[in-house]
Amino acid sequence: MILIPAIDIKDGHCVRLVQGEMDQVTVYSQHPVEMAYHWQREGAKRLHLVDLNGAVTGQSIHFHLIKEIIQAVSIPVEVGGGIRSLQQVEDYLAAGATWVVLGTSILSDESLVRETARKFPKQVIAGIDCKQGRVATRGWIHLSDIHPIDLAKKMQDVGFSAVILTDIEKDGTLTGPNFSLYQEMGEAITLPIIASGGITTLTDISRLNQIKGISGAIIGKALYSGALSYHDASNLLNKEAFRAN
Image (cartoon, rainbow, N blue to C red; front, side):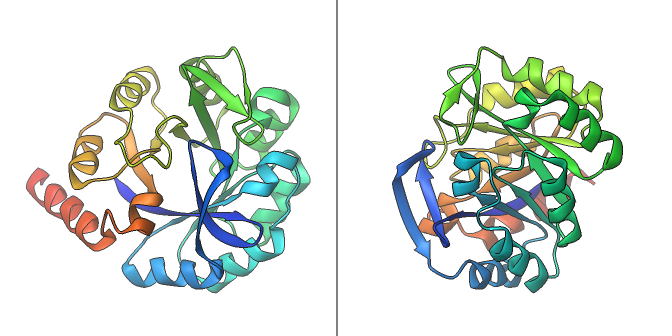
C-alpha cells in the first residue's frame, strides 16, 4: 500500500472540506504548486489532485494550475474533478497526468466510460464517492440509487484500472475510515482499491494495509492538520513490508 497526499483545489487554493461541504472549507495553502513540492520532498511517490470547483461545474476550472503542478514535480499524479468529456481526459494526459479519475461521468455517460477505458485502459480510474450506502455525484451534491459495489463491478467489467473509494461521511472528519466498506469492496472486486476518507492515525493505516485489495490510501486533512506525519506513516508501511517478507 502506498500513501498518496491529496491536494484539493478550490478558488486557486489548497483546501480541505468537511464531509464534502463546499462551505465548510479550510485553506491550508494559497500556493498549491509549493504544496506539491512539499509532499514530493517528504517522500511521496504519488499525488492526488482534485479540482473542487470543476467537480461542481463539470468544467476544468483549474486546468492550467493543475498542469503547472504536474509539470513542476517528478512523481506521478492522478487528477479528478469535473472531467466529463474525452477531450478533458486527453488534455490532462497530454499535460502529463499519469491517471485521470472519472466520477460523475461513470454514472451519467456510458459512452465516455467505454471510450476512455478502450483508449486509456491503464490510465483511467473510477472515483466512487458514497454516502449512506449510495453513490454521490456532481461534487458530492447528488445521491444516486446505485450501491458503490455494484458500480465498482461495472467499472471492472468495462476495463478501468483501479477504484478510488471515498466515504463522504468520513472525509475531513479525522474520525477514521469506514473499514467495513473497504473490506466489503475488497471481497467483491479484483481491481486495486485506493481508500479515501477519514484516515487519521498510524493504526488506521496499519489496518487498511491488512485489507484485501487496498493498494493505496489518500490522506488529506490528517497531514495538513499535523494529526499524522507522512514520514512516520511511510516508515510504518516500510516496516510492515519488511516483516511480511
